[in-house]
Amino acid sequence: LRVAASVIFILGLSSLMLIWTGLLSKNIVVTTSNLEKNQVIQLPDGSEVILNRNTKLTYKNNFGKHSRNVFLSGEAFFDVAKDSVIPFTIDAGKAKIKVVGTSFNVITSNSDADVEVFVKTGRVLLIDKSGAQNLLLNPGYIGVMGSQRAGKEVNNDPNYLAWNTGQLKYDGQSLSIVLTDLKKVFDADIIVDEPTILNETWTSPAIDNESLDTIIQLICGSFNLSYTKDGELYHLSRK
Image 1 (tube, rainbow, N blue to C red):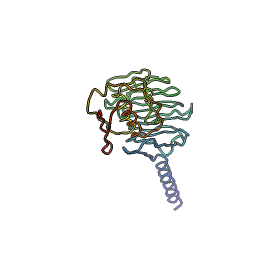
Image 2: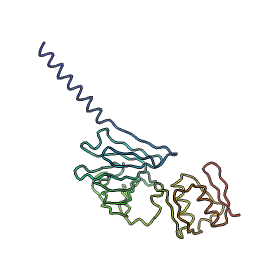
Image 3: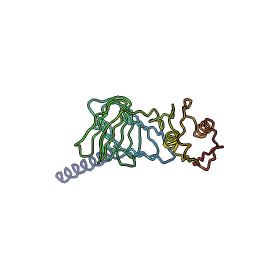
Image 4: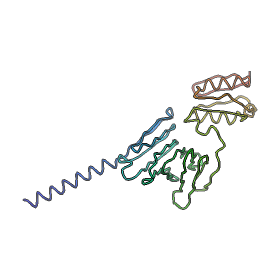
């Protein structure tokens, strides 16, 4: 009986350990819809993640205990707490990103399937899925990694993070570029009745978290245009 009781006790401990391990390894999943952006996630290690629309972030319930690994699909801005012992790793599908403590933007949803990283502060290591290629990115650089290419370049787009900051500034950029940016920031479609309008250049006032209606009105005022709105579709035409 004592042997049987001991076996039962050991089995009971094993079951409890399995349950405890299962609880610790449980995935926490945060998603945003196409109507949500700038959703802030505070991770247990003090790191902050800001999710753009249509984005999914997954991490373990015991994140930060022995590892700092997350999975990302979509786009997010990371401000990673420094920890020289436990690096922060992002599985971005086609590539992996490894840092100690820095801030950067990640896109996994490019149409060409490349993973794109823009470094704001610190340094970021971008690694392809096989581990054969890697790029070390310094502040101000954009790195791309995919099955067909890998490379980095200095970011010359002052509005790269506008989806997150809400700040836009134009100094002689074409309306084609402006409307592309507005599509990314507001997820709204803007069409023009004359293609030549897109070649016009715009120098804007500083735009800081203005509504899309306000920005459209600024554009129309600068170029003597009018607009109509149908839901999230804007139609610009000459007066």
